[in-house]
Image (spheres, rainbow, N blue to C red):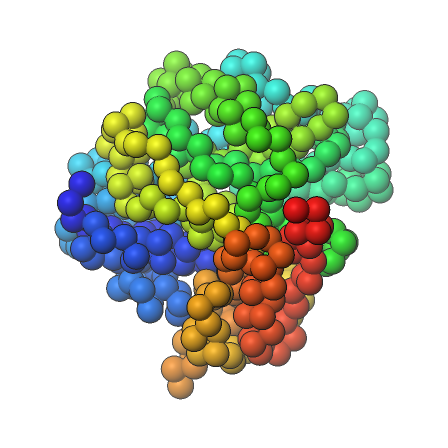
Length: 419
């Protein structure tokens, strides 16, 4: 592949990470993002678009002569945006709406896993109060209650409080209640064209809002990669028992999955178990995985979009480590306060060891960068090991000033201490 015009759909830190990597790729001759954010605008030309409107996205891609469209978030994928772009004959990285149900419906995912013999938690799909009560009673505490549909990373409640579990389940409508899985969690991404599967490096994220895994669930407050404590055979095992069988089963059903298959895993006392699948890059894990990827990103995504992954050489990775720390708005993950001015960005920009990826940001009337969401920034850093990488990340965090903001101080701390 020599020279490609790329359009990225989305406006969070995941899309900023994608755009940053694509902007550094010599094969990318033009880079666009819609709708983008204040940080993405520094590396790509941004355009207004309704990311859930497949026709609008396809029209924009055609007007830009895009040769590759990368759909970042889950909601546009479930809404069929990738289908609309494909119908125009434009290569797109992202699964069809039908295949994206792997994330869009946890019940569908459980059905696929059962057919493919993929190890996962036992679960009940419930639609009535009686079914909910029976499922909660069957599994006991701690209770794991998941909204069947998309919930922006916040549709899962894990609690030992029966009343709280029941309240969440009743609010969901259709809900999946499953057994609690012990052990550490791992995120493993794989790029696939519907047949060939290419795993990326594993990462671990931090879902709880506060240090020590306290506080409510969030979309993710930080991440790190690699995982020095993980079995060196983990990726091969997950490829054999989870990723390839899932892709094969979807293809067998006539619902080929092309794009990014994200397996959320628990390393339990009984072996690896799938917690959930996502149909796109995860946030904030993308920030650290792409920070370590040395293979140019565009050729990898284009090969998945055009069914040619089998022709690519093995991926190349940095032997060092990467850590990202999320800076969140006042009151996140509740109703976040927005419109606060963000200071310190130029000070981080001069660092050689860390950089800022924007999530919820925009410009105010005076041109200042202000907060525009719950998770505002991801400060990402690399180093020869986790200890150095997290030191660099927190040096960057300390330079940012955002009124009322909060962040975790323990991202990758335990793993770094054990390295």
